[in-house]
Image (cartoon, rainbow over all chains, first blue to last red; front, side):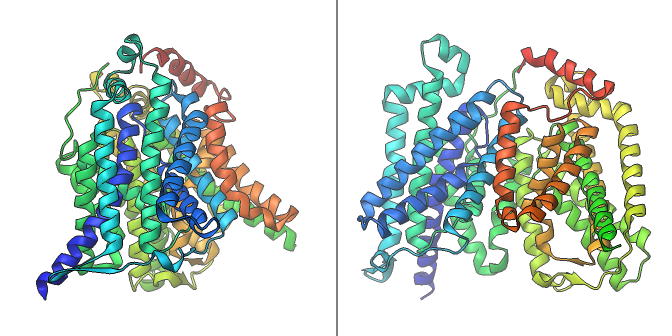
Amino acid sequence: MFFQQFFAQVMNGLTLGSTYALIALGYTMVYGILELINFAHSEIYMTGAFVGLIMVTVYKLPFAAALLAGMAGSCILGVIIEKIAYRPLRKATRIAPLISAIGVSIFLQNAALLVFGPQARAFPANFSAAALNFGFVQISSLQLLILVISVLLMIGLHLLIHRTKIGQAMRATAQDKETAQLMGIRIDRVISFTFAIGSALGGAAGVLVGVYFNSADPMMGFFPGLKGFVAAVLGGIGNIPGAMVGGLILGLAEVFGAVYMSQYKDAIAFAVLILILLFKPTGLMGRRIQEKV
Amino acid sequence: MKRMNYYLQVLTVIGINIILAVSLNLVSGFTGQLSLGHATFMGIGAYTATLLALKLHVPFIPSLIFGAAMAAFFGFIIGVPTLRLKGDYLAIATLGFGEIMKNILLNLKITGGPMGLRGIPKVTNIYIVAAAVVVVIFTLNRIMISRVGKSFIAIREDELAAEAMGINTTNYKILAFTIGAFYAGIAGGLFAFLFRYINPNNFGFMKSIEILCMVVLGGMGNTAGAILGAALLTVLPEFLRSVSPLISQYRMVFYGLLLVVMMIVRPQGLLSNTSFYFRRISVEKNAGKGGR
């Protein structure tokens, strides 16, 4: 009995954690390349959920199509945000793009609030979970689906970054923008591509969470966005495997922490953030980067 | 007479917002550390002052100051781990801290939970706020022309160079953050004793963003600008509300746009070259643009 409950909690944690990991990847990729905390990422995630929801409810599309549509919607939004709000500020002071990012986030959140209204919207009933029996443990089909999709996306990302030419360009740009440019890499295109991929992953997380919790609302991005960022810091910001590990750890920590202090569930992530900043500011897998003059 | 009272009330709120904007300007404008939880410190000041006055019958001025000290203490606590690193973390940490604080205020018995605290005596008036504004701006200017203030600006301009000049950047950042929290605490106390009712939502993320908008609109690192920004963003919603009540729905959308547009079109804010003192700084800033 204890084992079954324990296993169920582990599954909850892994499911939650894999969505945090998907969100964290968007933060960490952008930070790795621009050293910018993309505050609008939580709204990109929310947009993904809403696009998925509209596809399912209005156009009656199946789940897979809704997932792809959500990813595409977020992807486009991410690229547009970068073009309008961040690109003109690339040479500005550090604080300027950060404020611009917050502005975009506030704008999108409240625009969605005006369009969709504050109440949460539900996904249709045929998306609810079935319990799968594996001998003495039970797994919900949704949890399994989320885990499998997240893992596939992460493997895809890994291959993209390490096996393709554009991935190589991304790594080079993250290491040194000027030198990469000298090597003939088109920086603007690589940055756009990074935003596209990171946002698509965020959008996927949005659709998955929307289906999992069976709701989407304009404020839904706020906490998952923050937690995704914490997961990125936990793994070492700018580090892609770190973001995946960080997300999973954070998901597990939150689920097990909530057993003891449920009303402070959302505070756990920030406690983790403060602890990491105090004891290992480079994160679990990050390298210390010497600041250059 | 009623109209007069309304104008006085708006003026009083402008005063409180000026204190908030000027104090955030110290942290974000002068020292270059973006804080997204400024309203939290306002809230700590408001709740501490209110509880002292209501439960322990402490007089107004001491509870106000004690509230501010409490806010400064929390500013110090949150600043120590986060300000040791690059400023970006501060933005998230302050945001997270604000949410935790709101969570605590909503769950504690003594703070009245989501119902908040009511029955606070109305003590704050335009004279008290005016006096507070004068004291805050005067002390802030004394700080900014001192060695400490120069260190704040040096940190904003180039943290590495500042460190090479022998400035302990971490300590100065924490100091700026703590002073900013202290002033915000004063504003919170004044707020509580003006509206006579507080609840956790008064001091949430949206209020922090509102304060940030005031600073950005007026001009980061410009006290006169922060004052102008606070006045404009207090009067504007009041004015627009009298035009059409629907418009208040669009307020946050407008704030979001404002931040983006200001950063792209006029990052120095409305006022950038007003006073000699601040012009010199902006010249130095342009000169240093060659670096990173």
